[in-house]
Length: 210
Image 1: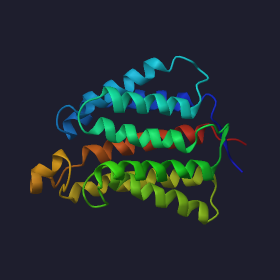
Image 2 (image 1 turned 135 degrees about the horizontal axis):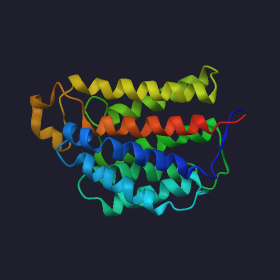
Image 3 (image 1 turned 90 degrees about the horizontal axis):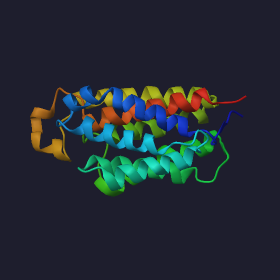
Image 4 (image 1 turned 45 degrees about the vertical axis):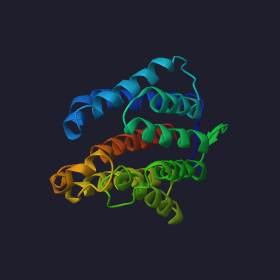
């Protein structure tokens, strides 16, 4: 069975931060103007605090969650903070992350996000990205595919979910005020979520053994 070590998994969070900061400008163009700036600020602050190279995966996620929930304003900080905090708690104390343990992360993350916003698929939110990845990852494992292949399935589902928001009309959050004007553009939250999940899957896949 393929697994990866939690020790040193902080590198995955650092990679997330680098990707978010790199895409700060385009994320703000998609969102309401400060989406990319706020998220880049939060991820950047978390990266600065992950000074130990051997930080475990769950500890790094916990640090990121605390920063997003406690130090970033607006509505998105708490949502993403809740998501990554649930990721961290799902694997807390584990030395090795196997497919079953990894699966609990998107499950817990989705439950956490919906406990705050109650958004469903089709509402043009980050749930349109996150929810399909839960099913895609679990379905791949149920079909007997490897951990690496299940991670590829997760990434593909995140991209499809993100792109599905182009034709949707926002029903909740700040974008909900735009109504029909929100149709025809990607949802910022869904796009940002796809970015996080893609880096997460890439990082986990790169660390897999044997």
